[in-house]
Length: 115
Image 1: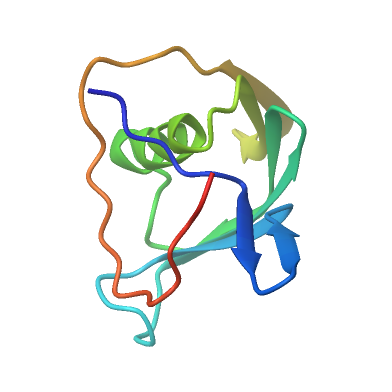
Image 2: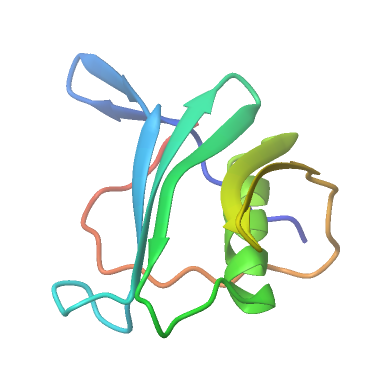
C-alpha cells in the first residue's frame, strides 16, 4: 500500500500549498536538533538548501533515506542537495523511485491533510 501526503491543505475557504519545509533532525520537536535543512518544493522537484549538521555529525544513509521517503510522500520525482565533500562543492541530483515499503509518519499535528 502506498501512503502519500498532499502538498495542499484546505483550511476554511483557503487552500495552502506547501512550497517550503524546514527539516530538523531531532528525537522530539522543540528539543535541540543536530541537523537542519530548508527544502524548497517546485512542481515535482525539491531542492534541499542549507543542509547543516553539527561538527561531529555526518549526513548518514539513514538521513538520506528520510529525505527520499519524504519526497515519496509528496509524490515528488526528484530532489537535489548541495554538499562540500573533501573540500569540493558538489550538487547531487536524486531520482525518486516508487517504493513498495510503507513509510511511517510520526505526527502529533491537529491539521488533517485533504486531497
